[in-house]
Image 1 (cartoon, rainbow, N blue to C red):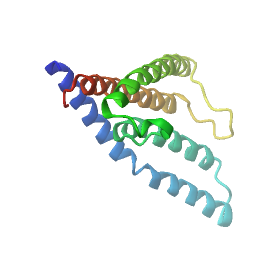
Image 2 (image 1 turned 30 degrees about the horizontal axis):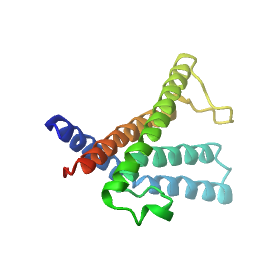
Image 3 (image 1 turned 45 degrees about the vertical axis):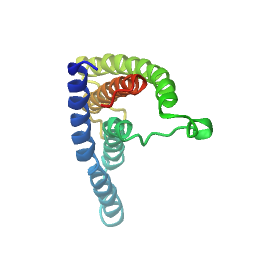
Image 4 (image 1 turned 90 degrees about the vertical axis):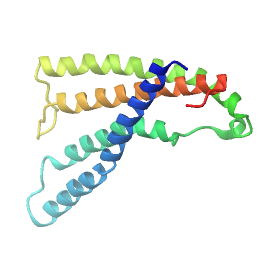
Length: 168
């Protein structure tokens, strides 16, 4: 494999590892928001922002953790036949199926960028009482999708290397 591909895979995986490890602690943010929501509903006036803030933090948690999940191989597979195949055959099938993932993520990113531009241009706000700006969460979604797209391309490179018998 060319040296620049090996460096590309190492660079992207290092970024996704760090982002994934950082975002793992986002669960505490969600718990804190939901805990405050429960306390405020019980003892004070209910907060208007807690439900939507919890939803936004959950979106960031899942989207930004997606690339790390792909990197660890913790995504769901149908293991009916796959587990009995050789590593080379798995890599052949994975190299084809990852192309569908790359197409899907590319399309998703394209739409996400368009939606983020719209949110910035027209100062889009949510249709709730709290009315937060939408561009921050849409930007986070675009970043997470981009990271997943980069990780999927790394998976394709690693599968091609495995097919060729090269260890990365």
